[in-house]
Amino acid sequence: MAPLISLAALIGPQEHKTGASIPRPVESTDLTELTDLYLRSYHPEADRLDAEKAAGRISRIFAGTHGTPIPQASLAIVNAVGQITAAILITDRNVGSATPGTAYIAELFTHPDHRRQGLAEDLLRSAMDVLHTLGHRAVAVTVHSANSAAIALYLSRDFRRLTQRAGVD
Image (tube, rainbow, N blue to C red; front, top):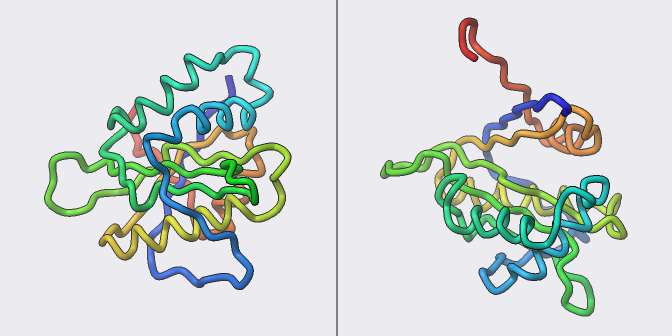
């Protein structure tokens, strides 16, 4: 198993890129389509995953297992025929507080046929803009160290690696 890397960024207003994809909010009715996209996006792991497990993963995010979902910042990009080609699911890790905590990117995935088109960057930029508007000051994500494309994306958006404090497991 590849080691995980935690990254975080401060959130400020985001530049709107000309020609960027315009995402729409993810809805609970998107579960089946998001499940299919999740399986296709993680193709190397698809042998281990099945639709039920993928649906469970997405359902747990919607249910708040990974923090309170932030529907305004959980976004999808759809193609010309209305199919979801990329999605970002965001939660708030500061459960039970009146002030926004650190937003957490629970998932960001793109269909393999639509990669290298800037969709993930468009989703990330749009989600960060919404989070800024909602009063969030930081966003974090955990990625596998072998996922160089994801790491490059986050570093390009000013994410920095979080380091563990001495004595913390």
